[in-house]
Image (cartoon, rainbow, N blue to C red):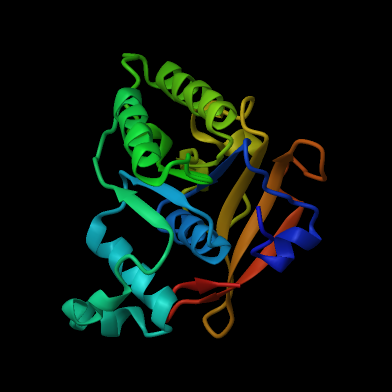
Length: 237
């Protein structure tokens, strides 16, 4: 896919259609903004399963990316920016617990309308997918197996958001590969973990490349890149 974040490209990370990348962090660190910035800047056709983030929040974030306006200003008068609806290549699905069958149905509907599969599929997040497995960790693994197969069948880049274990839930330190909840690192081609870096004057998002099939990575979390983060608009660069 197009190179969106120069810092990640310089680190040797290349996201490819037909593969899967897992992005994990503590709560409120920025998994969803990271994914939204990525697909927004790529301009590729995207089907976004936003199970963990509500429509109002995503609407405000998307308007801010389109307009450059502050998120808090958009939140005060959310009905004043409808001109931005549909001005990008993102289709949204907001079911809080989509099953694998629901995802299949949405993909078939997408293909019927657009005559092609989406180029990117975002799943926010892995634990929200209903797979029919009663055991929690088995459900995570089954969900990833399903999504990995979906990447091969559709040729889309699958971006899966995920949580980390409790010891890393402060969001202020790099997360190693072993910090993924459920240790689900075997299937994705790439695994990135996020944390809040920088300071109040110069906020940044830290990105640790902990798995990168065919490229440089460090499972300890020490191989890192940093994105500038405009908290006013939510834009990452």
